[in-house]
Length: 101
Image (cartoon, rainbow, N blue to C red; front, side, top):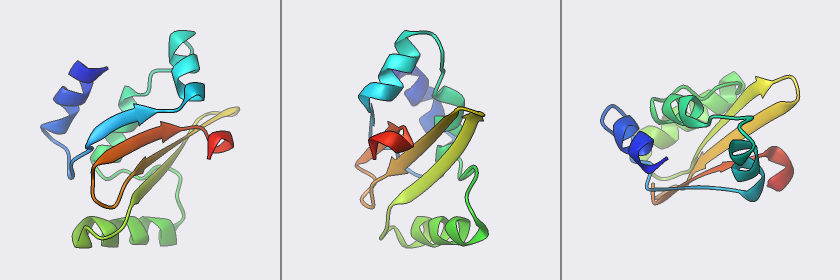
């Protein structure tokens, strides 16, 4: 996934930092049931997914100020939701399932 992340970074609106994932996301990838790259691309481009208008505004403000984390939520399938969180200092971006929060 490292090469994919490098390709994503060139057009990103913010730095992803180190990209990590939880065990649940890793297992879905290993099983061939999930490809996180399109969702990571959306997150890095400022498409926050299935957030409320207030959630989108909070992310947009955090993107401008650089003082808060960025959060995206994507309903991948009816049974699968992915969360992506980039820390306030843009040092780490974590892909996780809501059940792992």
